[in-house]
Image (cartoon, rainbow over all chains, first blue to last red; front, top):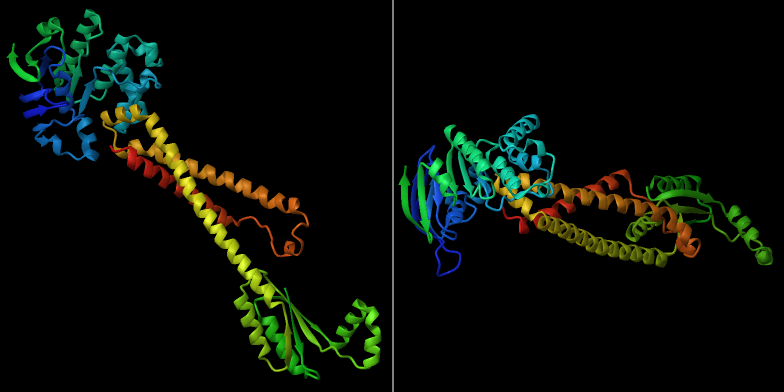
Length: 221
Length: 241
């Protein structure tokens, strides 16, 4: 499903954000990526999402080298993915509902269906009662849940999440992880970057350990 | 402008009719009036009663009969007028032609100058509108950078991202055209009143008229095209998605 071949990424010499990463992720896998801050977790997700290009190496998703997809066709890849950004990237001048519905709007889904699916996604993260509020009126944790609803609303084949439970209380974090697990059970491939060892212990199946951009260990529980 | 074709003395009725026919056939003329030598004398006596003595002394009617013609449109080119006069002068029975050649040529060059100035100013204004619209859209693209980025990340196509900006450019173009049309209407309506008789003889030559329906539509279409091109240029430069 996802294959990374000798991925190197350098923002500023001489440090390497990713250092010769080789990885094979099967369809339906549930991966945790962990490691200290600055170990390259976010960069790894960004290259898979093709938000940035690696300095060297190749990435193949669904038998397609995504680095060779022209810019004007990259939307096709992104429509198959859902991503929860570490900084959420919400539109603060749009309501919570609109932030979630945006994903379905770009897919050209009928308005009625958009309303139904957006409401369901917000209900899953327990925010349906705040759908007409603006993100600035929500707490940090609630904003994070809006970002999660936006990532899952279109049932993506690949779900990437960067510290999705970082600002949530343990109870809500468990709920969100259960939701990710459900999406995974429906066939989606899930890759989550986290520091939370409890979550990894509880939900972890396959774990990648990054340190200074290197993949130092891979565990399967 | 008045052009007078003087006829030969004792011209036969047939030849006169032939000249009249030729004048009436011409698309350049609004009117062609036959003035007999008696009528010409009468006119002279009315206009210059103090010169009656001279007429009495010579004891004959010195005025030839003529055709007094007026042009349909003052904006006809001098070349056309001259060609027309030459053609008529060649007809049998025409003795002389009287018209203000200098005036025709001066008006022609004035009209050419006005047209050139119009094109020059029009060109500058078109370029100015293009750059203004382009910059407005560019500022908007900057202001909505985050939104565009998020749209890209959730899988929006280039067209999906660009359409609002293109629409905005088109709307700006249409609004600009409509506002200009209103101003032009007011100018055409009230500027002649403001001028009054200050233009003197030019008043009859310079006529202020509003655009035709086709010209209005073309003007709005041009506004849309300029708006569209303005937004395309700024999107192409600043929205590389």
